[in-house]
Image 1 (cartoon, rainbow, N blue to C red):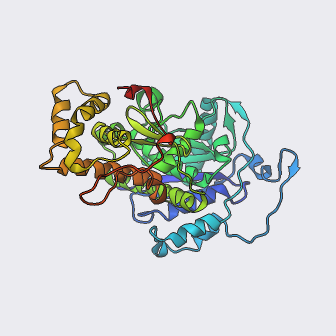
Image 2: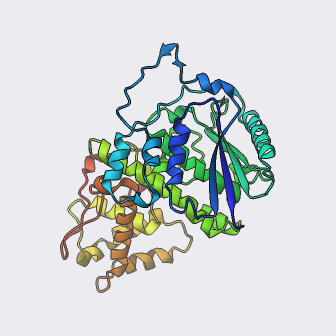
Image 3: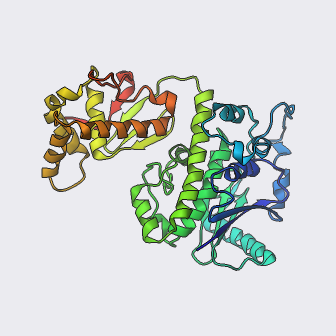
Length: 411
């Protein structure tokens, strides 16, 4: 496969707004012009009622704000690809100051998700026919204002004629920076179509427990969909499936690049906008959860055991005294360990507690810190890193009153 085309449709009657905001982020992603996945935004004649959505909401007149701020769309259109420096805080100040398109009134849930998808397939079929699109390697994403009784935000990617829909006036789009979630799904749906397009997708690939992966179903709480924009992650299991299904690495790299851009914008906007207060943390069997921020960080068993050990020892631990905590670490690693070879617990812990060679311990702590920084952003992560001066004790400086261990950690 040399090229994969993604056609994003918007109702022609809908005024410029959230769809353009999201697509502008896609346009400014790395490899937008040169990557194998080609994105195209089209205005198409369907859902004519979309044109009246912004006129009246809840029988009240909408207040028209003075045009003192640039919209996200116009901001990004005015920035050249070459000048988009993601390490530059000024860019994210511009994002903060840009006027995000207001959310659309929530769509009515009139039909089932299957009925809505069938209608969107008809729209996509007409678009393909009109534009002579018959090649296999393409996906049509229909942005819709119609809800469904199943309350799905997005669905689709049929094996034979890949079509997906995203509801742009879903309840989850009412707060925060909805253009980021929409941009994320503009990239996620083609990856789903290429790697996870089985008719039994929900039972075969979807995750019922939220882990920050693109295949999280978030059925219990649709607002957990926003976690995806903060993790920009694909779990190891799903990575293996992408490899097994022979999805080209160049495609995965390009689409994950969009995930990463969305995440970086999200974290940097929050860095500027939030009045920083230390968040609460829950240490669970396989992950760290930050419920105040809707964030979840999955750690490897060895990493989580080390992190739990340092969290339980508020005064800190130096590399030279780690062996004094060997028995505690064995118990902690035993809680995290998912294998069957119990001898591996001793082997791993002995290696971590080897005073004469602390490389394993240093590397494990470094990986923990890197993952925490990527998840929380530079400023918030300062509370939760394992740090200390050379030769001194290393500790986590967060307020322990805000930290909860789940019941599984009871020793």
